[in-house]
Amino acid sequence: MIPGVLVGHHHRIEDGWATGTTVVLVPAGAVGAVDGRGGAPGTRETDLLDPSNLVQQVHAVCLSGGSAYGLAAADGVMRWLSERSIGFQVGPQPHHVVPIVPGAVIFDLPMSEWGNRPDPSFGHAACEAAAETFELGCVGAGAGARVGSLKGGVGAAVRQVGEHKIGALAVVNAAGEVVDRASGLPWLPSLGTSAVALPERKPDGLNTTIGVVTVDADLSKAECRRIAMAAQDGLARAVRPAHSMFDGDTVFALATGAVPLAEPRVFALDALCAAAAEVFAEAVVSGAREATSLNGVTAFRDL
Image 1: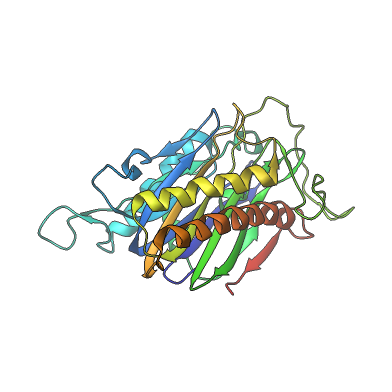
Image 2: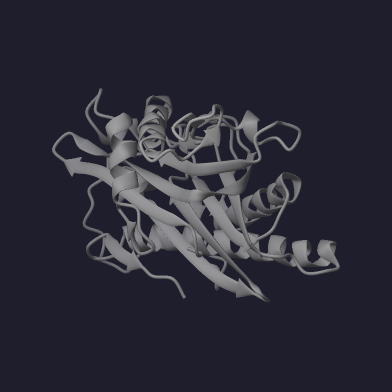
């Protein structure tokens, strides 16, 4: 994604299982924000990201399958971070920390046998696998994702905006259709490339697209929230319809602070917001494309 940000997956794709967890790790900490839309959110620690609240930085974002059950995967992320004394310092000793790990989940329960869903071991294993280079498609939190009647998955995109680099990771599990950015028409895989058998999707099923936008700019929590809000516009450009009563569409934003934001500050922020919408839309289309490719998995490497 960007320097200082790692991504890791853990999943089970076998008889009775099609679900997993994806972790976006920022061990050095990053300013965090969130924007949630739709009527069926499944989230954790999002109130903490309000600009008026105490904690200024987060250490990971946990994205998971398993609906509300999958929120437990974040416990494993907290354990992995605490084992390395990474977190919000609450005492005099190095290990006196509370890792800050907000998270969100998608509804993929019909893809596995009842009771087979991510638990804390998924989050811990995803942290163990975290790296600068990671896979896209039917991996991690995207293992059981769907888009309409097609397979969904994990997508990503990155671009340069002046002195800044901005990236996006999306777990695409939408009820609506993913839209081809060039034609404006529903995106479909090439005939014969999808080898994933899916159960029939009911039009009123629970869904949700979730993701993270990362940027190397030095932003406040309020400025970071503007990035998350703009990314939701990108989701709406790439999925039709989006933000329904059956979606819990949630986008986090992380700012590592490595590069000072140029002056005049408001114009530099506005350029990043515009880029956040574009890069998140690209990540959504990427998630649908990679999940329905020949093997459903490809590698994502930074610029």
